[in-house]
Image 1 (spheres, rainbow over the protein chains, first blue to last red):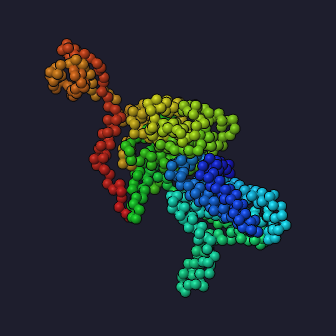
Image 2 (image 1 turned 30 degrees about the vertical axis):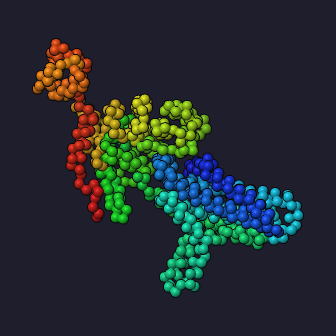
Length: 269
Length: 322
């Protein structure tokens, strides 16, 4: 089972490596991170924070684009172009196909996020090399702060959640609709915490219940965003990272399971 | 044991968005295909051929009825390992070359290393793509993709191959190659089940055929049982024939068709004494171009069956609800 999943995953990765769109996205992300150095120069005394903030934001935005645009096409493209017919008649079960697709995109995202992290550290390293005095003047957080890795790790898990949602929609709808749904859920996911306290703002008991239900049903993405805390040197504990990542991985597993359930029952007309 | 056995196999699709109604694409198909035979599954467009192949490979699930492939249900891992499938108008990944694609698919069957490399190279040579093995598939023509499709269907050296319109998109040379390949598979002990609407292919290759029209099985059996191969007439083509001589044939000819100036195709009944007729026409100044027996073809039978079915369509193919 693991071998065939690995083969499918490897080919998702291979496809994305050969995809020019992905290169453009990664190029722009790295360019943005590089440009943050120039923008940082314009702000006296805040340059390190600006670079970290912009670097993490660029990684987050471009990571989201990669997750959604590759995620929504992963299954849909195979079904639409009927290339899936050749695969599913071979010793590859439908759940292995879906898990392989997800694993392949997870690998692609990992490499991309790693590249962006390296780019950000490179810019910060370059800055420290140009202005050695920065090390002593950075009071809130060190310039080459290892906390940044926690922000990247949580960003990665957040993108896995987004990918799983995109993959789920991709098993039964076209790319436009899937992208719209996924972006919608991404935005809603950042305001999800408000739904938990819906009863404070509405009178109706039913609406309060609905808010509560949606709170548990929709992904809660705000906890993954630790940019502000990391940039300002506030502690992000390992326990917090582990719990949040655990929630993200659980949510992604549920979405992949749902994708498997939909895909396994599907007729390829 | 049969290679393929279906029992009252039925497939309904839902048509319509707001009020979906079932559409019967395949209706109670019961079929047996023996091992080591080339079986032609014939029918006009929309007859249910591709639906049947997708049911046999479990790309779609039946509404009712049963399927047995190599003695097991089609989802059985053992069946997957022993079966090959060429979909209609196959499409593959743009980013891979034919060699990479076959290497990927061979890997799904657990082939590795040198054995995999040899299998892939051998198959590409067999389908005539050895020279283009490293070319990205997006640069392939339709015919070349069809050849890749055949190669990938054979990557596991299957015991049973399903080929959906294997000749489509191929030029005459390609069709000749595919025919030779199918016969080679049969000689190797493989069962070939192929769908087609090109009847000459079926006539040249199949030991048995089934004809489906409108989702229903019209007939199945040996070609020699379906068709009486006796001579049903003679067709002679004459040149340099005067028009009045052609016109004077009258009731002796079943049909006289003028091809060009002085050139006529004349069809006579089996007992129409073609030798004598040729002699008479020669003495009237005509020259014999050809003389051929007319036999019932699969095409005649097919046209006859299809038109009969289409004249009386089965009631309720789009069925009412409930």
